[in-house]
Length: 383
Image (tube, rainbow, N blue to C red; front, side, top):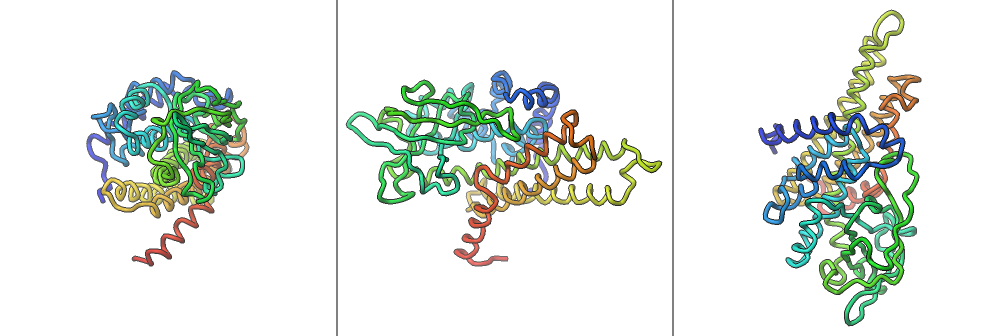
């Protein structure tokens, strides 16, 4: 496992950092306040190839390895976690499943759009089925020419802006999670109703909506994979998505840490900068420890993925640790700023709100602990 970045990775990181600081940084607070990331921001990232990071060059993408993709997400999240989650969801559980599980015809039809201009949305959760994906109630009934989808979906990131939706519905009610099937739907399909955006605590610029499936007719050739493979498709994509969440958490807590160090060196109390007070120094030291530990867990999971090794447990460990670390680090960042950390003029207030959901989406912390424990009990403890 190589810890140093390659020369290409350094160039990509620096280019993304410069782009984000120059074009997105000045707008991030207004995106949060107005609860929208404009389409122009996504289009700007699309111009740089960041909608096709996980797609090979032969299919129009840029073919980044996992660590390079995560570096990009971290840099975007440093400026806007809302924009980062939109790009992360699109790459990990939006466009990638079409490449991994789609037919060549589906790839030719959908990938050119997804790598160049259109966001994808991943629609698994329902009002009564979040962590328990096997409880999905949306149904897909097959006829001679199409499937008819009925039901609803919740917490759909990119749902308002997406051009393509991955929908998971039940084709067999008798076999639990084995009865789920995945479908590719296009925006504007009759019966696919996009609800209003949720008014969220954090990540306010990214749209999160509910979908209604009202007798939606989906052509047979828009089924993704075979019938009954939906759960396998979803879970395999969520492993990659969880590392992406960890990278977003890393970006947010990194930004909060930098703001805290800067503020602590400038703010004076009792005749000296508060950075000279041991209580503040201990906070900064612990912030840095958790940031670096998160990065190592994330990069190990990425290395396992890129070398073709199992990485489900490591993805859960990275997501669990980094998301909880981000909540802690941003909490302490507010504390270092004192009263100023509680007002919207200072970015750490936004970072604190943005970080909190990272312990929830793409598998709660409780689910990650179950995944880790079950993996350990299945495989045995290996030191």
